[in-house]
Image (cartoon, rainbow, N blue to C red; front, top):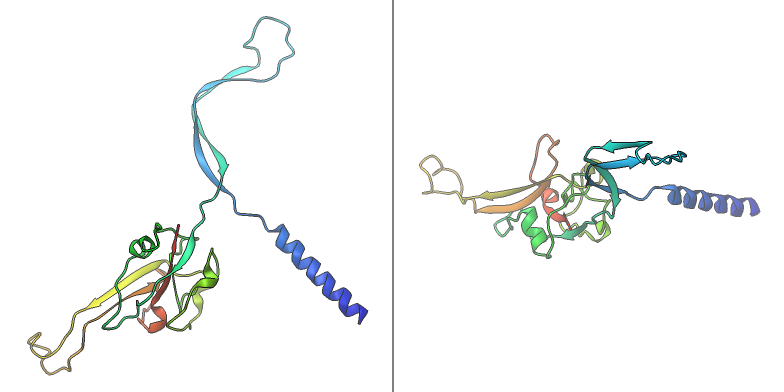
Length: 195
């Protein structure tokens, strides 16, 4: 029993150490530095103040800065159907008073491309189910809309013999690297990344 308790304690300590060792994300910005004179310390006792000095041309330097933090926000009613919603990434963020953003290049989540990284990923509601391989569980990088007009007898000369179909519209989340897109319910957009 004591060995089991010691083993659990070691496992918890190892997990905490690994978690603590993970570096926090660092962000940088370029700052313009004007030209100037750079002098190193000199032990000279003369009145020559240029000893050890050089002219540094104007340049830019990377300076650490606070990282902008985005978050996932839910989007409803996007399933491709007669009542589906066509919405862009910008429109979905604006509805929450935010601007479009990305996390590692990904901007959207769906049941087939769920997000398991970024602020608020655990609040995403997968209202159309989940499935598929998840593409790394970091979301999708492409929001696509569908807006198919109704079709039926009288709408065109070549489709009179085909059954009528109602208008269908909706918004989907995909990856540019994906091959075939099947526009299933699990492809429906359920969240976008904003800041």
